[in-house]
Image (cartoon, rainbow, N blue to C red; front, side):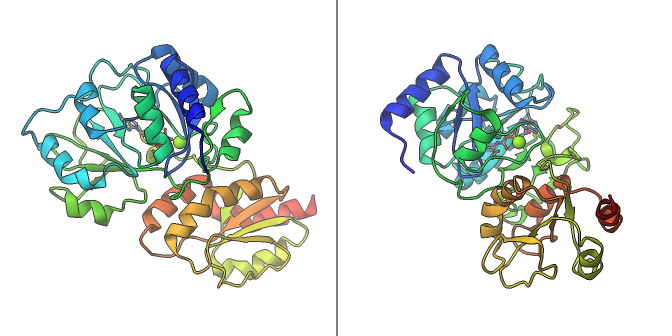
Length: 345
Ligand code: TXA
Ligand code: MG
């Protein structure tokens, strides 16, 4: 998808003058505003209906801009970790640094002294960042708690024509960036798994990643989507379904319209009447991640009573896929009884 240069110049001007612009990145679409402009950042929170205590990640065009917005002591442990991570930037990685500079508004970082920085690897995102010459605070371009947007149409479904949307076609990775937090005295912490896996990060970092709540002794409350119980959820109830539940479920849900998501076309749908979508030809995780949100959104519009999805198989993106899905699904134990109840109504 090609965005005209005039559109980019216009969008950059909107950012510079305090408006909100939705733009593509390789992970998901972002809803962006100048991170140094308090009023502009407030617009993001209002549009999304996002609670003000959830910090936004801030996007930069180049690593060289980092020192304008983040406090990093030369030769410190954080500087060393950052150096080691440099092959992963630009890319689908957000790094949370403990000390932001005052140029980033307090509302962008939700009053925390820390700030999450991302340098996206997408030509349209890069062009917007360069042309506007601003750091852009940009959460995922969806209504709070709903499924993230991986196409311009998804963004439009959430916000209509009220904002400028740069259409870069479908996001190539399809799930939000991996988030890690760096610390001067403790191992880096994984706040949200993503396309850059724990195993990959291990190759670059000084030590094993710790997990949220274990070794984080920075004293600052970490708020990351990974800690929210409900997130990424469609309006239609979504349930995990185990293969051994399939037969009894098919029996009890005869009168229901079921949407079903399977990871691989090689799997056979047991409940033949279900409206079935496959995330990939062979179950390959990259393809599943790329298609996950679009498929959930499609079924959410398909007037089905409920959607069922398999648990992801083990594989490179298991941690990221399972993380997103476990926050989107309802308690699987309720599934057969719910099916029975609804079919009688
Ligand atoms: O891939 C992505 O990260 C996309 C694209 C647009 O860059 N953005 C995205 O934004 O997913 P959002 O807001 O949906 O998730 C980013 C998360 C925030 O929810 C927040 O929890 C975390 O990054 N974050 C940002 N700053 C933080 C901070 N100072 N401390 C802890 N977590 C932070
Ligand atoms: Mg989000």
